[in-house]
Length: 236
Image 1: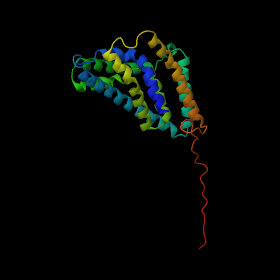
Image 2: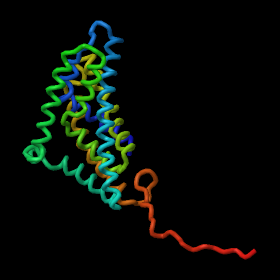
Image 3: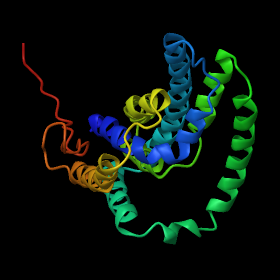
């Protein structure tokens, strides 16, 4: 299941270019020295991975809290269904959600701080830019967060999000070094793969929640009701 985070990140990086691409182009990089430029971009990515890891841990804890009620298997099914519905139902029905208003108010402050950091040219600024970038709204990040919740574990939730972020690194780095990278029909084909793969991940989470006894994919739930209380006594 963790490998799905890498693939989702890789395919989703084309979608993320719409949000993060302009930020990547504005990074205070040394364009005269490719090695130094690569190091600077790596620091930026490190900041993003830190942000994704923190968010993943928090949502993993949320999933753990829900699993304490004994609904971890059902939670996995619910997450899978939500993933599929988010692909099937047009996004315009989610754009008007009143619950998104306070979230975007906070994100406005994040963007303001991000703009300030983009004017600096220090390594710590690149780390801060990457970290703040990780909190910007992105549909694919929300999908990955659903996966973090479904794991019901803080460390696994954090790892899932870090792997998702790692999947975005190759194309995001290529864009910084070559602005014309991945344009045209090839880009369109990859974008079409994103919803298909999200549906597949959703289906995997549903299968995982069903507890079909398939190793590593759909393990059977551990039963605590059949613990034997019999004590065997042996005569000397």
